[in-house]
Amino acid sequence: MSRAHLHDVPETALWTLRNRAVEALRPDTRFPDPEAVRIFEQLDGEDFSRFGNPSPAHAQRAAAFDAQIRDFWRTHPAAPVVALGEGLQTAYWRLGRPGSGWVSVDLPESVSLAQRVLPAEPGITRLAMSALDRAWMDAVPAGPVVITAEGLFMYLPRHEVLQLLADCAARFPGGRIVYDSIPPWFSSMTMRGKVRLSGSYVTPPMPNHQCVSDLPRIVTAVQGVVAAHEVAVPPARAWDPALLAASRLRCVRDLKPMITALDFAT
Image (cartoon, rainbow, N blue to C red; front, side, top):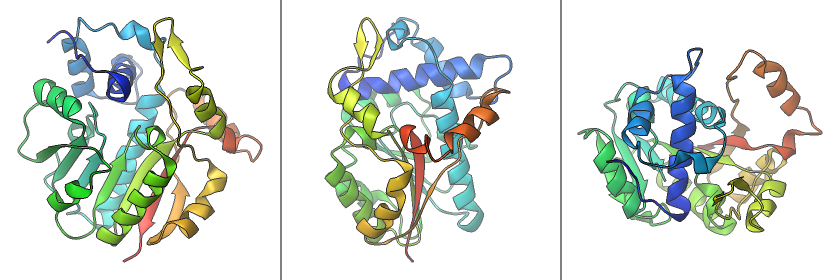
């Protein structure tokens, strides 16, 4: 296969794949991701240049999500993972092909591509449906689960995301959900078509936003959520610790993207 033929929001899976693979190919990489590299090289007919210059940000994001899953497994070693809007993410292989169960939920065109370019794994259940279709919950074993929504919620209406969070908390007591978000200023730019990665690619609109100051309101607004915290992003370069420290200053923390972990009541 030389091209993916994805469009609109599903096409962003190629953007994040390229960034993870390029980062993994660096001789000084801190984020090995051999499956991402393999798919990236397999899609040799794809014009990845439309996504502009590569960035380590998506590899850093993936590493932070991996760390949250491992952290949850320390207290719930048999917990399955539900990956909402998984696209071409390769966490299953980075985490050692876990045997606790892995449910991947995405739109039909994304699932179709994943089935063609990713290895067939008996431990992965792929469901071709919207993350907002609660039918995926019926495929998840009872008990605490860890849910990821990597690169997804910013594309959905805020009220639908809040309701989905509440439904997950009610259905999976003792579980956790990890998701990333963008700040209001960036959301506004995407809604006006102002985020252009290259001359030929403009990011899809991202109507949903969240910043650090919103975390206390999330706990209050979403029934069943007992804790909300910002997830630390690992450094990609030697100079990153200073930059990451600066991003935690009160004057700038609400201006940056963030990753959130919500814990559900038992």
